[in-house]
Amino acid sequence: MRVADREKTAERLLKSSAEKFYDPEVDIDWSAPLVDGLFYIPEQRISLYGTPLYDSLTHEQRIELSKHELASIASVGLWFELLLMQMLVKVVYNTDPTTRHAQYALTEVADECRHSTMFARLVERIGCPAYGPVKHTHRLGKLLPVIGYGPAMYGSILVAEEILDRLQREAMNDETVQPIVRMVNRIHVLEEARHVRFAREELLRGMDDLRGFEKPYQKWLIGFVSMMITRAIINPEVYAAVGLDVREAHRQALANPRFQETIRWSGERIMSFLQEAGLVGKPGMRSWRRSFLIG
Image (cartoon, rainbow, N blue to C red; front, side, top):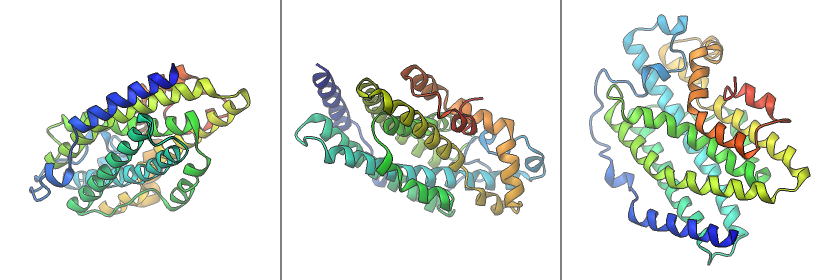
């Protein structure tokens, strides 16, 4: 019965993917001019918003900082999409390719390839570096497709996707944000809804299959990966773009109650789901608190 349910869900998602998908090369006008005076993320979501350092910036510097923070978010999102694709391919490697389940996983990989290209084009279009995560996080990321499996793997995917999803849903409806950014956000939000459905159902099935001794590892892994994700979103090097001391700006950002609240707000829906699923708890609680997803 569970196999039949999984196949039925995959069949629906395959049909939805065939009926509605976007090609960023065609559906986004990359030559459209950027609009003077508009932010690149909502101002209140800038990591330094509300700090003394932010108050010291001119309006133009604040817009410039928002541009570089967008570049960091997009390039970190791209980095995680690449890890996600590796994990999905590993699932297909061990699955009968004639099943709808395996075929939808491959369809999702195709979606993520387009999204990664879209994020790369966006960073290129706004003229910023592809910051990505800091070096030690980038190195650690290589381990995730190796050590990640089961509910923690799908849970990690959901944490990254749903945090980004909530930030993008807000930005795509904010007229103070650049039109090209809003379009990128809209495409990603519409297509990620299918991916979230797939990952949530796989996580719940995986929890039912876990043996008792595996649960502590799963709780530790998802807590640790979630902390790495939230700490990676804003690469500290973005602050140099507006002439700020990188270390001091990074310190103020991490201590900023508004930034911490942004992370908690963006993760509310997924944290509620993970808690109900039984994936939030010891030995992962130290990482969860450091992630800002739990107060």
